[in-house]
Length: 298
Image 1 (cartoon, helix red, strand yellow):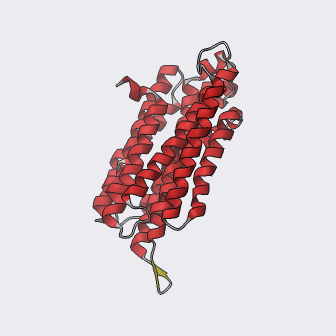
Image 2: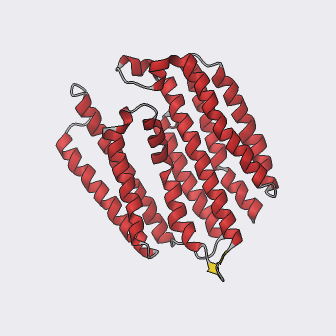
Image 3: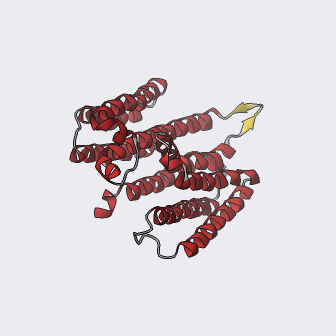
């Protein structure tokens, strides 16, 4: 499907699948007393969707203002009102969701996401490297917010001792979310390398346009070692999860080593496009490790 070849669409689909797998495959079957009911979970889903959609609207508005000769957003003033309305609905729903777990102030995380999206679209996306970090955080933010709203409230304290099984599940889930954030961070840099020629044409600055693809590829390889190290550390900590470790070794680490080799030798747009596709596959395989984790913990 051509639509899945678009990076933004594929990342959004990955986020949706991840959030669904965490809730219905991992949390709901294994944990009693989750923070969110099914209704409030879907409201959380809708609130995130409204806020992200608001960021997309703002991006179109900003692009129209930057390129007034192009027809990107027909009515900028009307689009601004629509952007404000969409964000108001998203934040309003999030307030209701936070109230459901008696943590009303948690809606501040949704408000913070809307604020970060505004700052990113209007200012931060022009700051070298910082824009990559913020963009990857925006993509992975639904994972961490879900942990906070759904899993954290379920940690029951009896005689001042936290339930160890729930604590383990929380720790592993947070480690998977952190790994996904790092993979998205690396992916944004690979995308910059892929579109370097277009960025030069439209005079957009990135690490790729400043230092070139040869240097950028080697630098990205070294950055990509960080997620690999974290995967190895994760495996060494959770030696009891035999099924998951076997899955990671064969379907995550081996493709990742192949990705590093291909990246080291990449020089052309087509080469970086293939590397981006390999990295997308690794991200999908990491996401589906949630399913393997369920069978291991069950």
